[in-house]
Figure 1 (cartoon, rainbow, N blue to C red):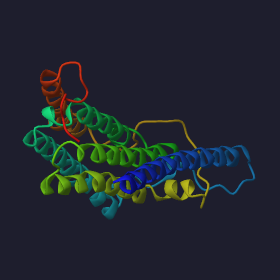
Figure 2: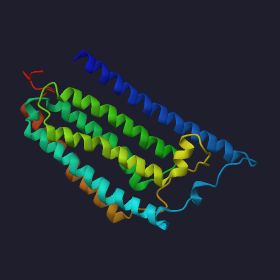
Figure 3: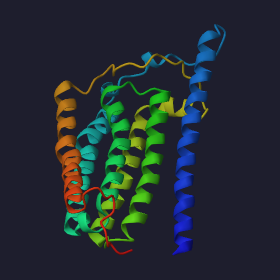
Figure 4: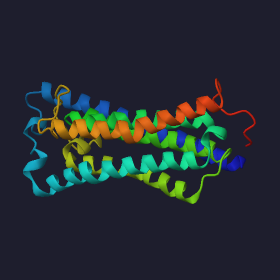
Length: 247
C-alpha cells in the first residue's frame, strides 16, 4: 500500500511538473514571437491572422464537428454516469463532501480549456494553457481515485467511466493541437509565430451552439455534482468526511 501511494505521489508530481513545463514553453514561444515581430529582418512565419480558417478545409471541418458533436457530448455522458456511480455507492456516507469537492475542482480545471475552445482564438498561450490544464486535471484525478478507493467500493463500471473521463480531455487537446498545428510547432520550439493580443474566434462556433453547450454542461455536469454536495452536507453537516467511514 505504501509503495502504491508513493507511485501515485510521484505520478501526480510528474503531471504537475509537465503542466509547469508546458506553461513555461508557452511563455518562451510567446517571447520568441515578440522578438521576431520587433526584428524587421527576422525570418518569422506569417502572422496567425493569415492561417486558414478551420471551416475552409474539409478535414479540419470534420474534426471540428467531431469535437463539437461527439467529444463534448461523450464527456457529458461520462460525467453524468460517474455521478450516478457515486450515488449508487452511497458517497454521502463513505467519502462524503471531500470527494465531491475534488470532482468540483476537476470541473473547474476542465472549464478553462472548454471556455477557451468555445470562445477564444487558439494561439500559443491559449494552447499552452489548455495542455497544462489537462496535466493538472490528470493529477487531480489521481488524487480523487486514490482517496475514493480507501473508503468506498469503486466498481468496474465506475473504473471504466474514469478511463473515459481521463482520455476524453487528452483526445480533445490532441485534436485542437492538430487543428492549430503552427501553434503546437511554436510551443515545441520548431518555429516562430508572431503573437497577437487575446481575441475571440475569427471563425466562431455560433452563439446557439455555445449557449447550448454551456447549458448542457450546467445541467449534466455542474448541477448533478452540486446536488451531490448538498446530499453530502445533509448527511454529515460541517464535515468533509463522514464520521465513522472506514478506510
